[in-house]
Length: 492
Image (tube, helix red, strand yellow):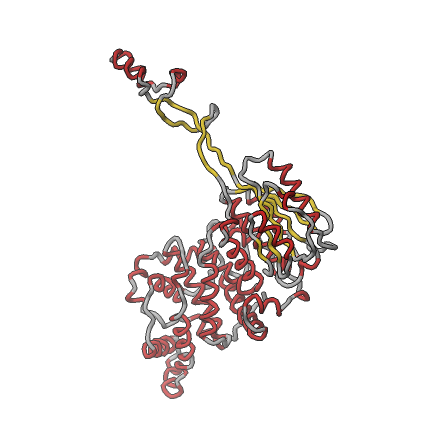
């Protein structure tokens, strides 16, 4: 992401009040503690944001009104004249220096009027106000760069739609990804494939990428231009972390492909993890429940109140004992039967092309979300002409370091032996599944190989196969996945 510089002549437009809202009529401005907003802005690297923009961000939390053209012109001229020497005000009466930025403020109002602020889903009004501030500051700088208002609005709305529904676990995983320069080689960019994926022409694609790159740089500037480690982000609002992801989404086309593939995979019921959570009786359980007595062997488990009844009313005690109507205490423990996935991931050199690494990571991160929700256990291995060491993930934290080392130079394998990968995956599943308390195991393969397959369906007995062929076709592999009842997608 290249840093974008704003010309010095726009310094007043960047610093001064936006002049486009009616903050004096906003109840939110009275309810939200501005000092708390400023404190949070300082914590996330936005201490350079000016107070007037903070007021506008607070006001727009509750769908605040935008001013009309005449009001914007009046406010702009008044604000600029307040900052002039008396001699300059006389000159301004003739030359109208104070009106020079009016058109910019009108364009800013046009830009923000169409921004879908409702897509910013913060836990508190303060969180939403901070996100609004970042958008206002970005829009002002984008206008100063000469980007048309409708283009700014479209790009901001597009990014908000992409990240507005991201949950905390998705954001955390996306923050773990290496930078674009690590995931995609500059000489391996495939604009034709990218334009086909998006359904637009290559010319429009390049123009979009250039504009998004500028807006992304401005977003990053709002957050101090520094990406902090995930462990240091607990204090940051989720709405702001989503915008940080949005800035990266605008800067890296591959992130768009990653989110798109992950959401496509989620649409298939067969790809959803199957898990079971229940409580079972256990002598070493850490929880206790009360239930009706079932046999006389459970007399030691009677509640203390039952033995008090024996002293107070012996006949009634014997009656309840005969009818087994006493409650007994029973130790319980949680039994989690999780889905077991094993993924075979192609690391041949051809995966460096275009956005293939991002698409592979989309499937891996999709399954890691299930691990994070404690619905699944994931094992995975990379393969090329051989199958490499397995990684078993029970907690998402275990996989962060593995994800961060997945740069494009890691994908340097000689060839793609899909048959070997399938058979080795079956073997490893059978070795591991006996040690796991899990549902029916599932094998996932992500590859760009189009080689023929000689693995028979009976070799996959008891295992569901999911196939994701990246930017290529492989009919044999697709048919094998269909035979096992798994998800089969090609040309991703």
